[in-house]
Image 1 (tube, rainbow, N blue to C red):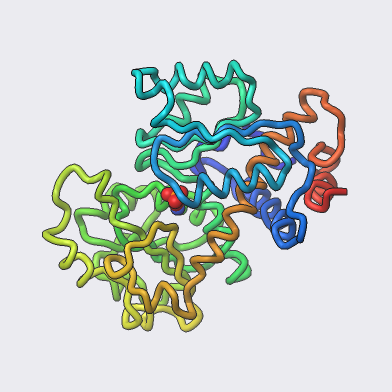
Image 2 (image 1 turned 60 degrees about the vertical axis):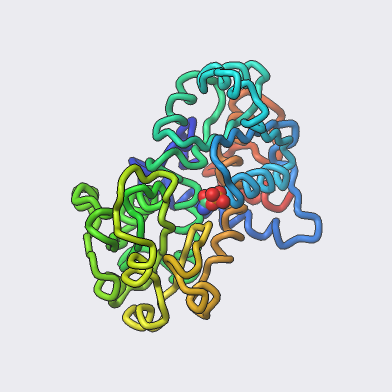
Length: 334
Ligand code: CP
């Protein structure tokens, strides 16, 4: 097994080998979702808790689907109806959940660093489902998988990430993953939303949309995150979309075989035109499909490994050799 970490808190610091292992594992799980009976027994008897303190459509649903396709039981904590509303702290909530012995907790939280805090308080794998403006590792993994599927490799590609970079956990995770795998990354947006700090992390900074997407192999569009904005970063949404909305004209500046990604939720007409979002270069729905495989891989790698460490009976999900044989068994259900 080439991924020995207890948690998945971010992509920062992961090696190319670890990233490639997670992507290869996700690829091996894709086939399960194409079957008539979309289930393998890899995590039978395991429990996955989804703890989401922010709204989510894709991440929460795909983690639940992924856990169920691995035969794990899932619990979705309704934060609004939980004791959080009575003043319970995140670490106390986590300790109490941990006392019920889940096998993994997926957490989304508006505060950067919340999953790291949880990881210090509980004795099961923590998976970051997006924390503040910090990281969203499984989103970046599904983006990397989608890019690799369409382009054959990631090394050597030019990837333009456009929009509200300042508040984007998706952009930060992608920057770490893409750079580690050898891509060139451009951050494109108004100076108020593209901090010079990103240059220290290896991004090229460009403020003109057409210049930023020129000759790009991949364009990733980001939503304006009004819920995280504390000041005025542009004079109006109209002005923003006039300068940064991805139109067919802008796409024409990129490579002829460019692919267009968006993590969702999309604001059509603000950062991306419908013509582009639904057009021939868009791989946005492929991203969503790959989200299930990436989350199956993440759960399998973090939870399935504990199964063998804790001495449970071996079988699908058990570890052995270089890890490829059990992956094969888990994916096929043999
Ligand atoms: N991309 C993403 O995180 O979407 P959700 O907010 O719907 O989970």
